[in-house]
Structures are given as C-alpha cells and as structure tokens.
Amino acid sequence: MTNLIRRAAVALALPVALVVLWWVATADSTSIFWPPLSRILGVFGETWFTGRFTDDVLPSLARLFAGYLAALLLGVAMGVAIGSFRLLRALVEPVLEFFRAIPPPVLVPILMLFAGIGTEMKVLVIVSGCLWPVLLNTVEGVRGLDEVLRDTARCYRLGLRARLFRLILPGASPQIAAGARQALSIGIILMVISEMFAANNGVGFTIIQFQRSFAIPQMWTGIIVLGLIGIALSAIFRMVERRLLGWYIGVREAHRTEG
Amino acid sequence: MTAAVTAGPTQHGGRRHRPLPAWLLGLIGPAGLVAVVELVPRAGLVDERYLPPCSAMIAALVEQAGTAEFWTALLETLRGWAIGLAIALAAGVVLGIVIGSVPLLRAATNSTIEFLRPIPSVALIPLAVLLFGTDMRSTLLLVVYAAFWQVLVQVLYGVRDVDPVADQTARMYRFRPLTRVVRLIWPTALPYVMTGFRLGASVALILEVTGELIIGSPGLGRQIAVAQTSGAVAPMYALVIVVGLIGVAVNVFARAAERRVLRWHPSVRTEVA
Picture 1: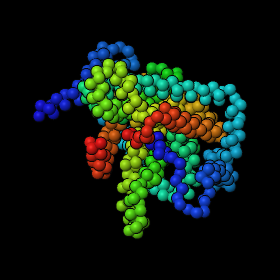
Picture 2: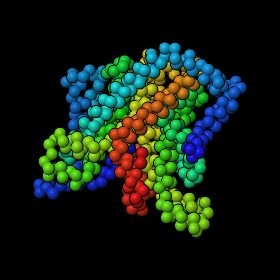
Picture 3: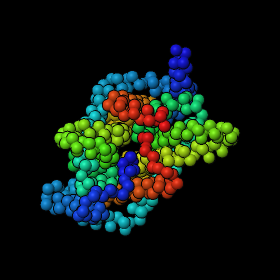
Picture 4: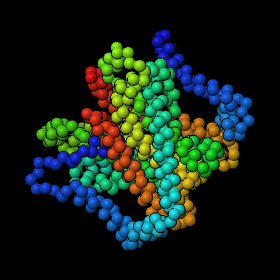
C-alpha cells in the first residue's frame, strides 16, 4: 500500500509542481500574452460549456473519427493487397513513397478545390493524411509474416478467408497498430489544420478566432482543450491496443525478460 | 517512418523465368501516374480548373524554377527544417540521456512526458503567432516541439536498453559518469537516436510546411497558400510536387545517415515507436 502511495507521489510530483509553477509565475502577470492561470481556468467553463462543446468540439471529433476509420479500413485493405503480391508492390512502391513523403497539410488547399470547405473536405484531408502510415506499415507487416506460418497455412490449404483472418491480419497486427498510432497523431494535426485553414466551426477554427480577436485567456483555454483531446485520444488508443494486442505485448515482454 | 525499414534486397523466389526487374516495374508505376494525371483532365473527366494536366504542372514548375522567389522560399523551408531538427535532436539526446540514466528522474518525469507528448503541436500555433507573428521563429517553435518528443522518447528507450551485465561491469570498474555515457550509454542508444532522428526529420518537415501554410512564415508553404488564394492552380500543384520531392529527399537522407552512422552495428534493431 505504501509502495503504491509512493509511486503515485513520484508520478504526480512533477506535474503538480509544474502547474503550481505556472500558477505562481503568472499570478500577477500583466502581460496580455501570459494571463494568470487562475483567469484562464476561470473562463474555461463559460468558454467551452455554453454550447461550444456540442457545436465545435463534437463535430471536430466526429470528422476525425470518420476520417481515421476510413483511412484504417482503406489502408489495411490496400496494404494487405500490396503486401501479398510482389508484382503489385514493385509497381506501386515508388508512387507510395512519393505520396507518403508529401506533408499532408499541403493537401488541404488541393482538396479544397475539389470539395469546398465543408465537412467532406476535412474528412478527406484526414483520410489522405492518415492513410499512408497505415498502408505502408500494413505492407511491411504482411511482408514480414513468419515464413513457416505461411507455409503451414499453405500446407493445410487454408481458404482465402481463413488465411486472411487467421494468418495475415493477426500476423501483421503489431505493425498495423504502429501505423495506426502514427496515423492518429497525424489525424489530430489535420483535424486542427483543416479547421484553421478554412472552416466555420470546429476547435481549430474557434482557437484561431480567439487569437485574431485577442481573446487571450480564451485562446489559452483552447490550447488546453486541444491538449486534453490529444491526451484522451492517445489514452483510448492505448486501451484499445492493449485489448487487441494483449497477446503480442505479453509475448514481447516474455522475450525481453528471458533475454 | 516505420515502413520500409526492413526493405532489404527483394528476395527472388526460386522461379526459372525471370520476371521483369524491380527497377523497371518501379518506373512503370510513376509513369502510369503521370499518364493518368495527364489524360484524366484532358479527357474532361475532372475539371481542368481543379486538376490541371501533368504537362501544365510541369510547365508551371519550370516557370517557378526561373524565379528567385521560389529558390528563396525553398531555402527558407530547408533552413527552418534543419535548424528545428538540430535543436530538437540536441535537446532530445541530452535530456534523454540525463533523464534515462537517473532512475528517480525517470520515474518522476514519466507521467509528465506521457502527458505532454500527445499534445498536438498545432495547438501551439495561436501562441506562436502572438509571440513571434509571422516570423520564422513561430514555425521553428512548432518544429522543435514536434520533433523533440520523437527524439526524446527514442533516446529514453535506448538508454533503458543498456545491457545489465555491461552496466554492472562499468560500475565495477568505477567508470566516471562521463565515461559511462560515452562508452556505454551512447553506443547502446545510438540506433534509437537514429530512429528518433529519422522520425523527427519527417515530422519536422510536416510541421515546417504546416507553419508556413497556416501562419504565413516565409517558405514553400506560404507560396502554396498564396497560389491557392490567387487561384493559380497549376503553380500550386507544382509547389506541392516540390514539397513532396523534398519529403522523399528527407526520407532518403535520413535513411542514408542512419545506415552510415550504424555501419558498425550488428543488426538493424526493430523500432520501438
């Protein structure tokens, strides 16, 4: 029990100290850029919980979710196909390398031409950014499948469906998860960017509005909201990953302690 | 990023008749893309105002390459990327080694790092604009913040990976702290540092261009935004292509640097992202 308390104390000490430092350092700050933390927290509630949460935060998250999910499905499907056929892989790999290397935010102006500035554009931007890490990691995962397992599946003449769900997808899943994790942080960036560039609602849009109208404490609350979104999503991701990939994490830990 | 790390020489199956060589197939892909982008707008399947034919993009690119403005913007982008990455790398390595080798420090900072890391760097855009305006420093802030975590986390993994026997041997011989870092920790952590460098390099480019695009600090991103608002579609595509090529170059450069620095390393380690 005391051990638990000590661990909690060690984990919490620095964050608490940092917040206290922020509080004290800005307590009687008169700089307009660095308002006192007490004021930021004071306006937090009225800024976000009087309609903005449902009007801005939820639509942003919904777009992120839609785009991310579409990118996952598309990336895994294409990745399995490309990873399984050597000819296809050789054919498209240079093209993929190029598309992957384009920083996704520059696609915002291009996709705006096609889809305007509405919801479709933002979802498309998120899909087009999240797709590549998932796709390329899936290709690598499928390529790196255990040869013995692959041959065994062939010997037993597993059907296409069984091979896909019993062999390929589980075998590639650690790699797919690594890609999905990268895609998530890119997705959050794109969610914000697409709204900052052109939008009429959303978290990114709201924060830029605050900054342009010099509502500095409100802008700070926006930064905090974005931070919290990032933290919450990565926590959720880790939970899901632990659930789905529990077997793999266990195997890896075992290897680590053995070796 | 993670992908293509293991891309070694392609294994040829035991086939008798040789299939087309990989480089030829590799050329067919991009050639096909160029043909599609050329033909689709020409055939009227997509409005030319939205997707100009490839030849128009290339013409715009050639025209851009003739202006001094383009080259200044290109240099600004590369400079911002390089400076940001260098700062992030230095800070990440130093802090990573310090935090990683003191157990108490590691335990104390763990929660904070896990907390700060997922904060999207774009959240800092409004703050950066207030502090530095459209100066290159505001983009630099984003670049450093984003790339720093990539490096730091990898270095922390690397320091943790130090072989216990080697570590105890070093203790037995009473290595001084500096010797310990140079002889023991650094060689162990180096592959991870290079992974952090590679991940950081591409993230830094993303944020560099993003900052230019959104904040309007000088560079190719701003040129894209300008082309977009003035409806110059073909030049905009041309600039996007240039940015993509820079991205490819950054990836190739990072991988080459990694291979060069780790020449001595017995195996290519799997990445802990």
